[in-house]
Image (cartoon, rainbow, N blue to C red; front, side):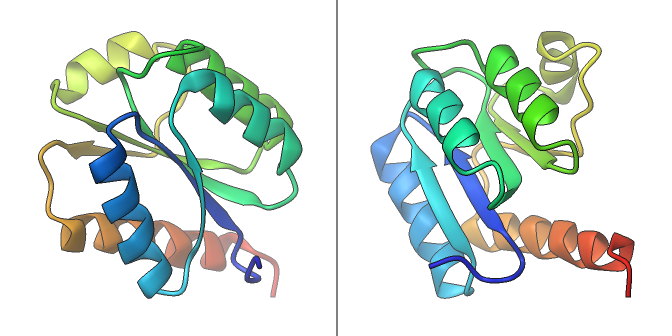
Length: 132
């Protein structure tokens, strides 16, 4: 069941963290689609391109490379917002994704409340960009 704001695709290979993130975002009334690896994320990006508004991804996941997932997401969902969560610094993230825009960087480990704040801010900004 998707709400009007669009869904968040969470790409995280650590099951405990992915499930905690999904649960807290759903509690805040967000629609969440979960992917445990890059290959699944690619499949979901194509399948739900009309529904996904935000991609939240970890830099190091098995399957298809995250750079490929991000490039595909940007090509099939041009308005998508991207938040990268990583234990590596932001400069590493920018190197991995050089040439591809990242909207937000979240340093791991993070508090779930911090993550919700970032997602709220992303959707608030998206709301302001939408035609009234």
